[in-house]
Length: 158
Image (cartoon, rainbow, N blue to C red; front, side, top):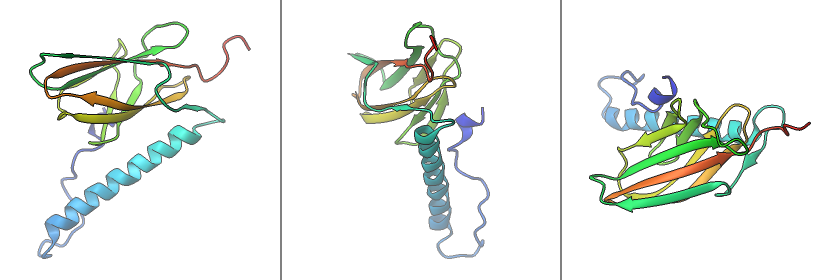
């Protein structure tokens, strides 16, 4: 639940009430918090724990888009590489607009609040290499399904 509320605008910011640029300072504070959070998440994804690895590019990613949707919709399905089983609780961080989401018990994430455009996101799950996906193009009337196969963090045979 915390991840879903990570990028909500703060309700109270330490800005003097009578300051002439208070709205600007609130927005600056908000985006500074977002930037630090994204930086920290990116560093954790790349460095990880005990030498974890990161898959860059769209290896293991399959995208299909269909037109005719009432609004742009992005559906992400996260599965294990060798098993093909869904990965519940996988963290999905959308780059812009900044949004942190968590996969449901079936490994699905559905975002229907995005405008048309090109999107990139990172996926992280315990026991799997983090994965970045770039260049997902969402049209104004399209429903895009992105299937991501996550590689294991360690070799299962070892």
